[in-house]
Amino acid sequence: MSLDELYRRVILDHYQKPRNWGRLDDDAVTVDLNNPTCGDRISLQMRIEDGKVADARFTGEGCSISLASASMMTEAIKGKSIDEALALADAFSRLMQRQDVGDIDLGDLEALQGVSKFPARIKCALLAWKAMQQGLRHAGQPAKE
Ligand code: FES
Ligand code: FES
Image (cartoon, rainbow, N blue to C red):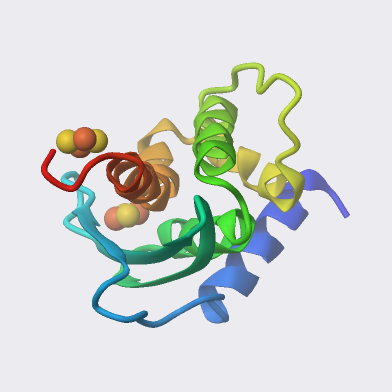
C-alpha cells in the first residue's frame, strides 16, 4: 500500500468510526476549541489521574481530517503522563511542519504526515492537539491560573 493510500484509509477509518467519541463526567478537564478559519469545533474531555491521562473523549463537528486526527490523538494519549502527551503534541506538530520529530515514536500518527502536503489543512489536523495542549497545561497548574 502506498503512503497516500494508507493516509486516505486511516483518515476514512477514523472519520467513519471515531474512537473515544462521547462525553466524560462534568468534572473532567474540558476544552472547547474552534478552528477560526472554518468554524469547525471540538469539545475534548480528559480525566487526569496520578498525573496521567486516564481517559479522553471528544465530540465536535469538523472535516474528515480534523475528526480523524482527534480520534487518533485520544487513542495516542490514553495512559500517557501529562509530559509524555505534551511531548507527543510537540512531535505531531513538527510532523505537520515537516520538521524532525527527534526520537519520539509517533506510531500510527505517522500516517497523517500526508496532511503536511496541504498547508491549509494543517490547522484541521492540529485542532484536537491544541485542545489537548491547552487542557493539560492547565491541568498541571493550580486552578486559579
Ligand atoms: Fe474545518 Fe478542517 S475544514 S477543521
Ligand atoms: Fe492557558 Fe495557562 S495554558 S492560561
